[in-house]
Image (cartoon, rainbow, N blue to C red; front, top):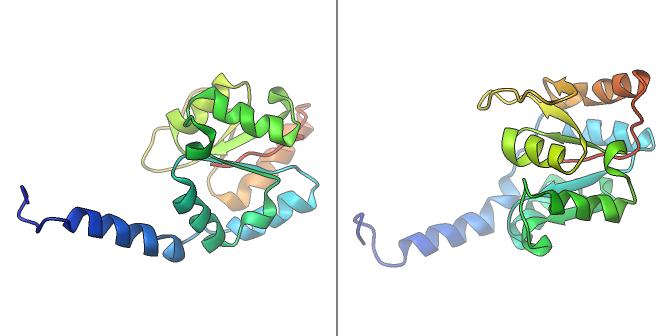
Length: 167
């Protein structure tokens, strides 16, 4: 009412957003083909995301990507949010992967890159025009289609890539 909207309008807008946004999610270009390539390479894949279970689950299902992941950790269920290292540790435990053998791919400098670093994971920056590139990443992917090459270059440079991550 304070901003000239009728009482209950904010709740109505939120409810509408929560109901319809997940079915209208648009994946990053190359998402499905990249996940297929990583899974075909035998990588164990996990997804760590901030948000409410209902909303994030509907987004994941709307994008059709749930089947690619061996672990999906959603902050509401985990009781902590990125960049808290505990959320990454939950995923590592579920995947049975040591932190130094896991790679986390993300596009947020604090929630993703700082959080993964604090949990001991190797970080790959999925370039995002909205954020400056963090200093402590070991690889950069301009887009998701480049991700398999970036990962396998790490492996070729002597880094063991046993686990995958997601934002």
